[in-house]
Length: 492
Image 1: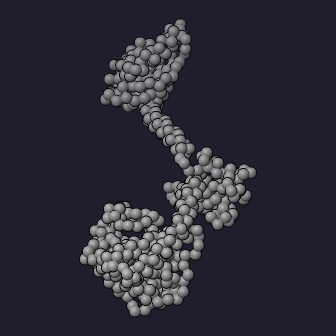
Image 2: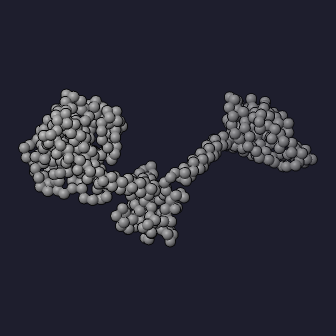
Image 3: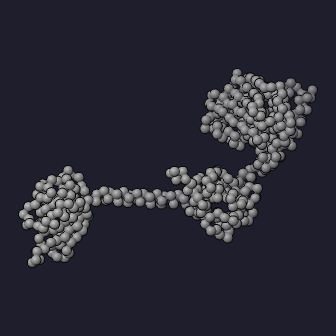
C-alpha cells in the first residue's frame, strides 16, 4: 500500500521492498515533500497514506528537533556528507509523539543533481522509554548506594556484611579498627583461626563461635557481650548483634553484624556497682547499731508514751533504710557474679504464709486487705530466705500501689511439677509503656513517680534475679486502673 505523487516509475523490486518492510520508509523530495511512503510509516504515525502524501517531513517533525535535521539535510545536498542518521521526535496524527531512529541517504542523478532522499524510520519509543527508566533506576540505585555508604560510615557501631560462606563483603572504618584488635597480624577476608576474641569469662572463642561465623550460618542474636584484643589490659568490650540476609525465596545470602563498643559503659557500670557495694557496706554497720539502740529505747520503761511513738517512727524509717541497703548489697553481689541462692528442701507454703502474715501490718495501715490461698503444705527445693525475699517485694509493691479497700490475693499452687505463686492486686496498675521495663534494675515507672512511692527500683529486678537463679520464670500482667498480677513459677 503506497501513495505517490509526481514520481517517475521505479523498479518493481524497490516497490516490493518498501511495501513489505517492517520499518517505516519514504522517498522525500529535496524540498522535504513526501513522494512515496510505505504502510509501516503510516501505521507508525497514524496517518492514512493519501493524507501523509500531502505533507512534508517538516510538518511532522517535532519543532525542537527540526533545526538539527535541516542542518544535516543541507549538508547532504551540498555534498559535505552522503548520508546521516539521527534520533528525532515525530508528531503523530492524534498529537502524540513517537521517537524515531532516522537514516537518510541522497540519490543523485548522473549529472550530480539531487533526485530524492531515501529515508528509513524505526520506532524506538518503547526502547527509549526503557532506556530512560533504566537510567533513572541506575541513578536511583547509585544515589541509594551513596546514602548507604554514608550511613555505613556515619553510625557509631562497627558494621560487617558477610556472605553465606563467611567471606567479608564490606565493613566500615569502625569495624576495621576492631578487626585490627582481633587480628593484630592481619586477616584474609573472613573469620578464621588466630582471632583474639573472648567471652565474658575470658575464654578464647573457637572459630565456630565467632559472631561472623554464627551470623553466616543464619543465626540471629542480640547483645552478645565479647572482649576483643590480644592484651588483656587494653581489650575492648563489644555488644554484638546479627541479622541474616535472605533472598526473595528465603534462601540465606549472608548476614549483617553490628559491633557496638561498650567498654566505657561497662567501666561505668562496674564503677557504679563498686560504689553501691562500698556505700552499702559502710551503711550496714551504723544502721545495725542504730536499730539496736532504738530497740533498747523502745523496751525501756523510762521513755514516755510520746517518746515511744517517736522511737517507733525512727525504727520504721531505719528498717526501711536497712531493707534498701540489703537490696543494694544483693544487687552488688549479683553484679560481682557471686552465687545468688543456696537451695534446700523446705515447705514453701510455710515460708509464704509467714511472709503474708508479716505484711499484714503494712496492709492494715494502708487499708488494704490481703488474702492467702494455698495448700497447708507444699514441699520443694529452693532457697527459703530468697523465696521469702521474692514474696516480701511482691507484697510490698502490691500494697504500695493499691488504694484503701482494695484486695491483694496471694495464691500458691502446683502445676506440672512447678510451684506457682501468684500475687494479684486491684491497684492503680502500670502504664503500658512501662510494663516491658519493670524488671530492669533501678527502673522507676511513671506511676511510682506520680504517686511518690519510695523505693530505688530494685524490687522487681531482685525478684527476677532470684527466680531465674532457681531456673524459674516470672511474668507480669498489668493495665492502668486494672491492677497488676505477677506470676512466679519455680521447678520443684
